[in-house]
Length: 255
Image (cartoon, rainbow, N blue to C red; front, side, top):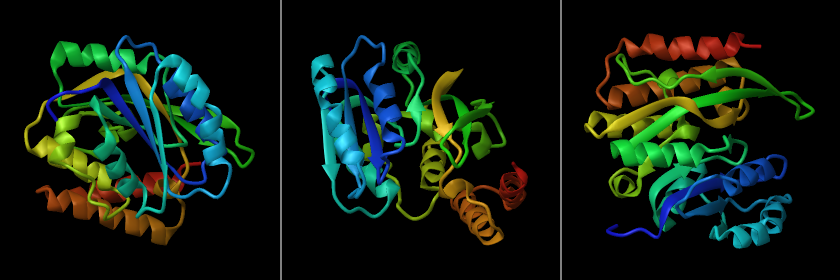
């Protein structure tokens, strides 16, 4: 893609996200950034009020001059939705925020300034993680620091804070194979020597729920095996089995 209409394209996959999508929309709408950006929402055919909530915010998007694209149709899962959104993106830099997560105020400005200073290919920053109880009340659990070091481990990386140059996505797409397709994509880009920049400032917020944190021995074993398979496919040592086991044990004992 030789030219861009926007500095950012923000992509949000959704499916039956009525309880959380409003916060996501608000966080995208109210970013303090000089350059223009667009928001692309790829919905998997929601049957709750997700689409109505999104449409209720359209006038606000229009007033702020932020193009809002909404596509609702069946898909093959969250990574298929991400790929669809990327193909539509007209921005120089692509960020992906899920419908139960949200950006920090000023996040785009931080990323934009960092891009101007470093010319990164891939960027990520710190992530605030929240617990959610059965009543939907949130409690801050921790701030997950972003790092760029060896050994390469997924606990140093935060997908909701990741921004990638649009051209890179012409070469790298999500494989739509497993829960950890995002980690696989990151490893492929890193292994190929592209410029990765980390900023130790808060960029986004993450609700601690969903399939990546479901409890249960079978689910933990499956996640661990999938993560290990991705490490091995990308050329990493068999010793990474211990890393995968440690991550799942931490999830099992966490309260």
